[in-house]
Image (cartoon, rainbow, N blue to C red; front, side, top):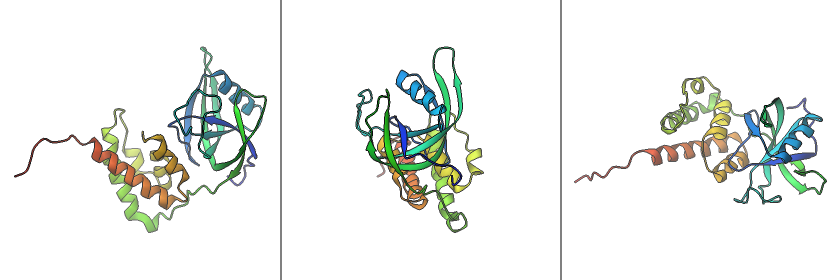
Length: 213
C-alpha cells in the first residue's frame, strides 16, 4: 500500500453484513442508481471506494447511521451487464476512521477520513500453535455451512491470508464483522476469530435429548 496515495475525501458504500479488510478481495453486484453513479465516478478518478457498515437496520434511509470505521478498496475489475448492473471487484487497501461526512451534490455519501494501520502483520513462526487452532476451528465450522466450502486451499494459506478470508466471508453478524475490522492488530483479530468460529461450530452441533445417568 506504500505506493498508493489515498485520498482524504472518499465516497462511502454503506452495506450491512459486508466486510472488507486490507488485502482482501470483495466481489459486488451494483444495481442501485446512486451506487452505479458512485462507482462510475470513482472509475473516472482514483477508483477508490470506502466500504462501511450501517450501524442500524435502516438500510434504505439516505442518511442511515453508519459505523465510524471502514476499509478502502480499489476497483480492480468492473463489468457492465445487459440488465443494467455492474459487477465489480474491490481489493482492500487500508482501514479508515471517518472524521466528518460532507455535504455534496452527489446521490451518494462522501466523507473526510483518517487512515489507520492495517493491523495485518503477524509473526507466523511465533504463532504456529495459534495457526493450528484457527485451522481446527475453521475445519469444524466450515462444513456446517450450506455452501460447499473447500478446506484444502485454506490449509496452504498464510496466517494473514487465512484470517482475512475467514473474517470476510464467514456469515458472522454485522457487529461481529465490525469487531473483526476494528481489532487493533492481527493478534487481537485472530483471537476473536477463533472464538467466533468455535462458538459457531458449537452452536451448529445437533442438540441431543439424551440424558446421562
